Length: 471
Image (cartoon, rainbow, N blue to C red; front, side, top):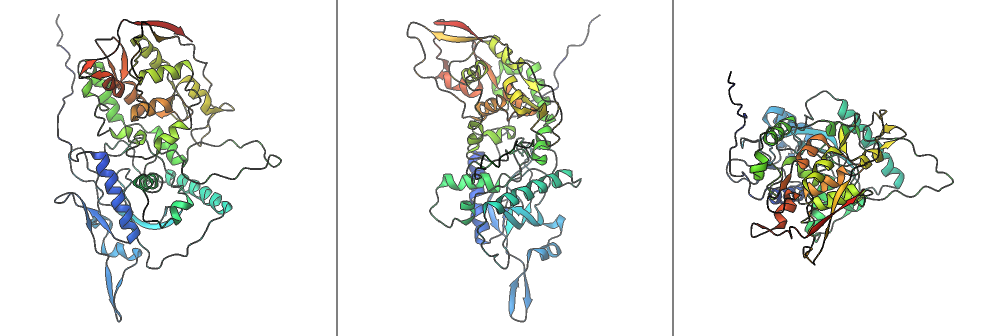
């Protein structure tokens, strides 16, 4: 009896990117929008003709003294929710724009409140701010005021997470990143700075903290460029209360996986396509990273590596060393790669993936500290994995060990090996973003594999290596 041959149900369509150098285009678009927000201009993205920002005149009303601007609260009468003229630069897979931005009155923004247009059908960093008719008085906040604001912001995050309206949808949209957060803890210097000679890097840093953090519900709730809290005297210090590392909205977003992308990765991996055509992997294109990896790409989220580098407590363990060599021109044996993948631990509470060291670091007093539920979880056993670490002889060591830890794939691997953890969809993305080189028979992450090629040819020293067991 014969059975029909199974043929995987997947097709690949090659299409030109709608925006060349997407990361750079979005960065420039953010800069232009932030500048326009400062100047009180209303901008909307033109998807049809210019593919750039277009100025939208502010509505006015006629009075006895002439035309005067209308306050943001009056916009809803002129532009109902379904007739808003404001659009962000994001597009769907078919190239069509998302729904128009919707006006929000009195939303949290840059350490205070503001009226702005924002997306409701996908996580979007672009916010068109409506300048108030009367500028609020400038107030210098004390440390107590800042702490009070942060507490209010956390409560606002929790309230928004419990809402049932459609303001925040699951992060399975292909245009939105799968890994961002919900706090805009902007520094006082960023709020009060008036220097017109700020560098591009400082502008992007401000964007990452103020403009881009709030819309994306997976961003880490710590601003590396923000003010540091004052130390508490030891005499007054008590045991630190148990609290979640992430706010409710961030933690819930990290629980939500991009099922469509995960199914795609499972299909092409099971069909053996990645072995024959590694370029079919969504993480192959380094110039236009997949949305799941946006949070770990410093071209899109400036200073995101500061978050990663603050939690490298397990970098010099055997697992950390294997992660480094996987993301370098050295590479690792395939057996080490399979051992490394089997090391992953899933937390039943926060649904994040960790190495054993990272998992135990995020558990405190038997509870998960990556979700406000603070549910009881079991600690995992310490890693007992044995890896084959490479040692070189005959002066055949590669001239330089180029590491790819500063790429989005490498940074995600580092956060997997820390108390931060990574969402399950990100774990599947990076754990399959590897290439097994046929020439040297070693495994590397996609960025590291591309680095180890010279003129498209493997440059590994080959047989001049001696594996060494390291616990």
